[in-house]
Length: 270
Length: 211
Image (cartoon, rainbow over all chains, first blue to last red; front, side, top):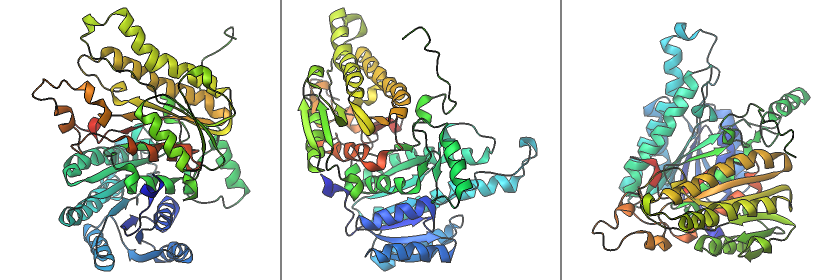
């Protein structure tokens, strides 16, 4: 059973893997045996991730990529196939712009909305399309994993971001339906409050601790916790799982009304 | 792959279904000491990992569901897991895990499955609600909801010329195999799932994710 988690011989692309959750997923995939294309906008961050992977004996190549540009995305996937011979795994993780300006909703400019949609939603379509084209041609299946956000399932004042993130979930389910007959599985990870890296100082640590008090497990998540989930979804360990959303949020969304801290009064019931 | 290593953990698996067998084997392979039991009274602590996989299925039009049928389904699919979870939670400490096997019919309706779907729906919300109570105790609880699996052939009327339509309706066009549950149970029971609780993860070949 444990061997089903292995990714030996598999070739993967992880976008947004210069830091944070993307880096954690790329490092975990490499540890499980995959060769990984480290894709991000910032070259220095790509190098840092590559060093971590190479230091532990893994294989990684860099791709400076802007995922809002479909030409860039196609070139990134071409690079994977040219360098490694094929593509088995696409982790479309790059995104951002969770805090989208101080405009009133009725003053919100076109460009700001379009930027958030391009970064978080169009990018998933570009990555999925480019990867699926090769995977269908290869004829032996594949895996696509998108990274959304807990805000996708709740409203939020920075509305463009949850809108794009919600779109990712529908895109995931539709892609799973379309690509299922080719044995290409498509799933989406939905992180709640997860720290991107170790706290820089005491102030940040205290802020995280306060924020964690609103979450059922009484802490925010940590970047490395995404790695094993990415390995599970990328490997034969999840061979009958497709079109699903994998929430990792310390129990916040399970409450339906959480994380509000509301608990019905138990007085008199003891 | 240290996060899939369960060495030193004491795992208790309740049930006599194929998922119970597969999960016990998977935990054992991952290094846990596994105790497979068939009744709530056999639960003993301390427990690091607690899995429940009981299930009874019956398909009848709602008008034909007798009180006995209803009691049987609710008992096997909801009351026994509830009692098991209640007892096990008193024997579990910080950083421990519960995994409950359920069915996607807990989220969806299907003709002739009223009592069955309702019993699993009850489990789904039991998972969500108890997750809130268990979190401060350091116990996580999550569900694995199954679609049409290989051992569920009895649920499809063989005299029906469209008997395989349930399978055709899955995105992957096949029934699930018991062994496909083990790795998810191991992830949910391991050190990487400490920030995961109150969730229900389908292993259903995409059954519930399209029209």
